[in-house]
Image (cartoon, rainbow over the protein chains, first blue to last red):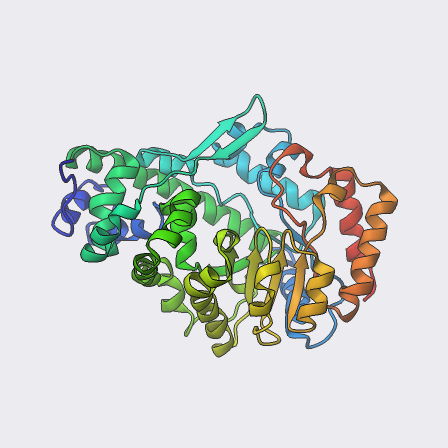
Length: 40
Length: 389
């Protein structure tokens, strides 16, 4: 299987998609997903 | 403005007195264990209730207005189905016709992934392996698109949580059950990453690697706990400072519990005591095999809630170390006669609650229609609320 996301290089690219969030909060928002997504 | 702050403080004091034993509480503190049962009780289907936040808000409010508990295990904020679906995968299945709600026991992590996880570290493994596998991302573009949708949905969910918490705290005068959470890493493996079967096999086939994986997960699953406990001020907005659930211990023998679970449970207990906090421990399934460990809990800091363990036996063993919580049979809440309900409630007060340390709660999470009936629920609440300790 091809690697879809490269960490940490692609985090900024993922954060770019969050254009409805203030720019300086996008990376923190992406990083916070770590605690939420797998356990729900 | 109502007298909500005063009521909130009074409710908090009931719990504090039950746990810390400063003085006997004025009445038995009552915790609601209604999860999805309240959706059905309010006349909605699961889809109507759980996927529509306005309905869910109304349902939670109606549940409080009808039964008037002092705190709630769940206030309509535990269901992230819309959020995870927006990210690309929801592990819940709703069947409104049959009144069923199921959770798929899926393994996103295999035993064969342990080496990769340990080599990369959890954070890198999470982004490169787990997220694409769980949410079916086949390209970076798909990931960007779905994460955008997911975060948008998460913001809607966060607004729902904020609205509900404000209603309970500032209008109803009800403290939340806890401010923060703690989780033993084994729980993350058990119900989030590897599933029941996968973890059972790993404990036997690769115990050392599993132990290393748990150590790797430790800082991530409790990042909030470790960061906040030292400086977290006490508040009447929640009954307990932290809550935790035990479930994975049910598939462990004594030796496995000692290796994979107890060090992390002990860490929670020690931190709560060190910082003089109030902790809540909900033991799902049975606690019978770990009762010796629970006897190490120091007095005055914890409420321990039981599910399939006899609370009368638990009281004999734990004595005055913890506030015995829960254990009220759903069977009685659903189809017990009035006299059976009163007799059992009286027995609880005579054998456990006589010293003011019992906290009422149903023994099981109330999920489905026949888990309780409204008449018995009110009857039992009224009994405990009016009982003079």
